[in-house]
Image (tube, rainbow, N blue to C red):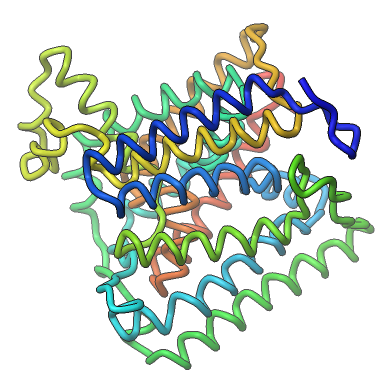
Length: 384
């Protein structure tokens, strides 16, 4: 243990363990899939550090806006998106970034996406975290969120068998604002929409008499960080992911893969399921060949490092029935909904909108509506 200048006790054992595991991850990823994968493991670690130090979550920010009208978290998300589109749109319009081909997340818009995002919104409030929130709180030592993550994976696998039905519902296909409108009109439209949402949050705060004050920042090494700094860092790191991986940051596809590999190990012929026939190789190969998995591992370890630096790594096994029930149900709903909606708050919302995809905006509306329902269900599980 060590005490920093800010009075925060650094947990040297956790910091050392997290750094060692990160080094092992980077080394193993590089050995398995090359230096590019090693770099993506580092980016994952940085994402986890930023998410934890800035306490940058979507679930709590949406819940505060619904329950109290406080909108600082939503404004931070709009800043993140504004920076992201300014970085992403020119690269996506050109089709390359620093000599590497890149493409965005532009997925079909249909009733399945609406249903999936709505279900995900309910689940994120019950589970206590979204896709990124679940990972960084697991890394931060939350035993409850380990349970949420397990059932997030389970829900993802269950959804695989139902995808033919959901994706067969009426839809309009993928819609890219960059393709339809051109680079600059698409960029100006998105910036105007972000400004409109910011103005809406300020109006709601004034009407409800809410004083929204940013959290006081701490030491830059130990945290906590200003949430706006976290927003800017996440936009830059997603852009770095676009360059290294050729596509934006995503999270939940790895959960489906982990679950599928688990079932395969138990003898279940999941390779014959719809949507897995062409991905049998992914089940057979090491997860270190999967970009999303490697980055997810990095996020968990980066958050563990941040928790150790901030002296906040304190796992507890004392979970009540309400904690367990909400974690199980929330995880299942998020896993199921994310598969239907082509992602979670990161892959569908953040990276979808950063890609200029209409499905990202549809996801936002449907998931926020589901989140409003989820907020009202939380007291049934003893959650505030």
